Length: 267
Image 1 (cartoon, rainbow, N blue to C red):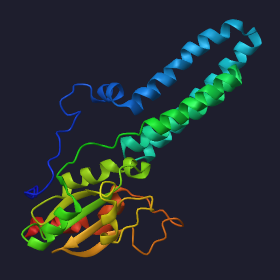
Image 2 (image 1 turned 90 degrees about the vertical axis):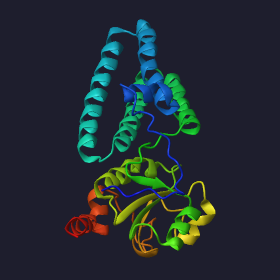
Image 3 (image 1 turned 120 degrees about the vertical axis):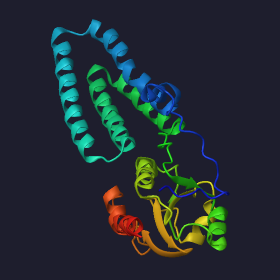
Image 4 (image 1 turned 45 degrees about the vertical axis):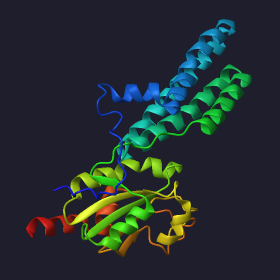
């Protein structure tokens, strides 16, 4: 029941990880963000083995206790996040953040100069590398603002279009980048199509859709025959005062995707 892709849709490259037998291993080696973090975390074992040679037995035991506390706390927090987070991107981002916090805390026991070096490394990684978003598209189409407007003007596509307006330089958009693709696989049909517009490439077009790039969230707009009928978050919400969560269940409920799918199947 997947919707036919419009002719003007931008071709999307085949998912990078789809043909690789170990996609996560491939990501860790090819993506600078993951590679830098992996090298930094494993460097601790080299630093530790070199430093403990000059430690007294009491200091070595104190370091070991702090390491055990850090590992146990990290394990508990990771388990909680694994249950609560809806996407792998969000879970990995939180896991790496907690790992860096505990790594900094443990290295303070070794030497504050070492801890400062790790702190500088954290800043360098933050500046040089960005966590990659989910690169799957599901049954959605990547569109430019002009292509989307052309679709609506021609009026020969699906009755409904649910469009995700994202800015992939935003960490919030990266954390939720998998949700829309998953929804498109389930709910895309001849009656409703899914489109993705990256406003990071077209910032001047944001105002045309009533979207503020200062907001922290992706914006989702449902169009019926080219006319906006609903959006999330609501245009009247002050994003600085209230930041609504973006989950599959919330989007399904807000845009009545289950109801629209049942109506399509019944028709």
